[in-house]
Image (cartoon, rainbow, N blue to C red; front, side, top):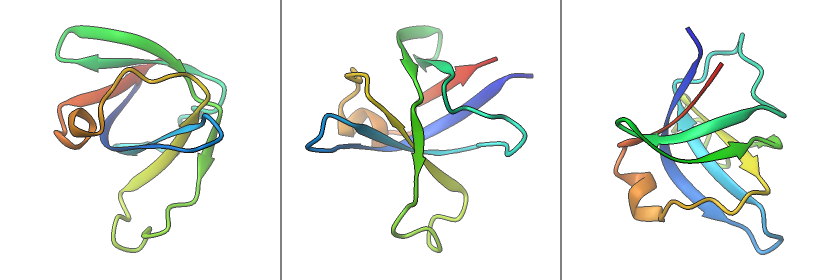
Amino acid sequence: MGIRMNIHEKFELSDGMTVLACSGYEPEFHVIGKQLGLIFGDEVRQTLTISGERKMLNQKENITQRAFESHDTIQLTPEEARSGNWQLIGD
């Protein structure tokens, strides 16, 4: 089984970095430097490269979520991210 995370939030930072708050991260998977597919059902919208992880400010309230960064321009609106229907998947 590969990586499969549900996206909950999208944040665009002024330096061009985008952060995705995701749940379903398994610690044995190392996602930094990996390419993951941004999918909705069977639709693959794009492939992203995960460049790092950020500390979440409200980590205690969202203990099941992790925040991953990408320098890619992510073709996902904040509303789509909050819908809970989009995922990141990979090997």
